[in-house]
Each structure stands twice: as C-alpha cells, then as structure tokens.
Image 1 (cartoon, helix red, strand yellow):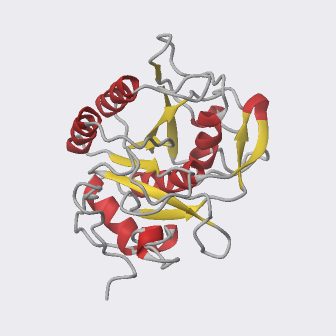
Image 2: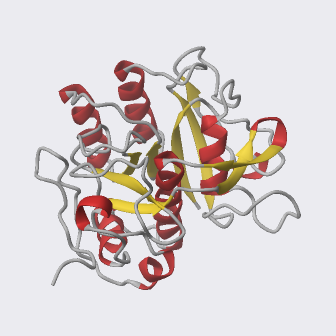
Length: 275
C-alpha cells in the first residue's frame, strides 16, 4: 500500500466508504488526528483517491484498496488556510511516511517558504499534486506552480479544458474535473466539479503507481505520468496532457523528472505534444 496525505479540511473517517482506508493524521488547528471534517472538501477529495472498492456501497476510489488516506487538516471550516499551516502540513506529511501529498487548493502569491517546504518533501521522495484553481485564468497559482509540484487543470468528458479551470505555466497535467462522483459528509455520495477533483484523480494514480512498485522514486512516477498522458486541448491548457492511468502503469521508463514550476518556465514537457 501507499499513503496519500490529504492536506485539506480533514476527512470524515467514519464514512462507510472511507473507513477501511483512512489512517490517523494530524490537525494543525486542534491537535487531533484530522479524522473529522467540518467543511466537506477533504472528504470529497479522499473519496476520489481511496473510497473502498468491492464493498457494495458508494463509489470506487482510484487507489483500488491499495492506497491509504492520511488526513492533514490545514484548511479551516470556512475553507481558507494560512501558508504557515500548509508548510507545517507538508513537512509533517513528509516526515510521517506520506508517498503523495495532495493539495486541492490554490493561491496567487509565490512564497519562498512554501517552496522550501516543498523542496524538503521532494528530497524525502514525495510526489506532490495541487489544483491550479477555478478562476478561468492563465495567471500562476501556488502550490501548483511551485517547483516539484504536479499542477493539475480540469478537463471535461470531451477532453476539453473546462471554462472555470486555470491554465498556463502552473499546469503540469490535466484530469477530469466535471461531475466526479465521490464521498460527502454524513456518509453521502456527491458530485464534485473543480480542479481539486482533477488533482485528486492524479494523486490517486500516482499513489497507485507507488503501491504497485514501492521502489519507484517520486521523479520516476512523475515522469511516467507525464510521458503517458493523452493529448487534450493545448499544452498551455493541460501541460503534458490528460492523465492516463493504464498507460502510466504499463510504462517501464526509469527517467526521473521534477516539475520545473513557474520560476523554471513550466514543464518539462515530455508528453504527447512533444514531437
């Protein structure tokens, strides 16, 4: 198995479709284990990544029962957060065995301190994934636009960029982000739209690759995701393309890649747009 740290609003750990796959995490607000969610967003993303499969209830997560969710509460009940908590969450997750860190949030400002924490987690062999944001803008957002982070834009059923999705140099990959069925509060099942849903799909795929072959480094996993993506829209819209889980699992390349981030000019682009 592999572990995905969901840096978010917490997770409703007793949800009937999540309980089997949630382990204890940490809340940066009340010192608890992050196993409750006063908002809902963290529970939505957790279900996409790791809702239990073949349990006759709810949905099936991308992780196919090979992925555990580690909730790290860094976003408040009102859906907003501070860089300081997010930085603490990244470092805590990296130090506590996370294989993937999912950050389904975005902000326009670059923070060197946040980049430093991301660099630390990268050095600990963590794959980091973040939403580019839902403003329909080409302006850079972070942490999606940080070096070492897979920034994810959202596509629809026709492999077209969704109008609300941000695009540009913060984007490294794309994934479906419209009408994604997932786990909601009070053990409900809900539909989710947004780049955060798309980022959760990518995090689930990355975590499944790690579970399938624990020897893979973060850079090799990033490389396989990028190289095997399908073309969708333009490179500006989807970076290396729309993620393809089956092709990523079939890839045997050991070439490691680190997302360059906005400061590094975006990319590197190794996906289907490269001639």
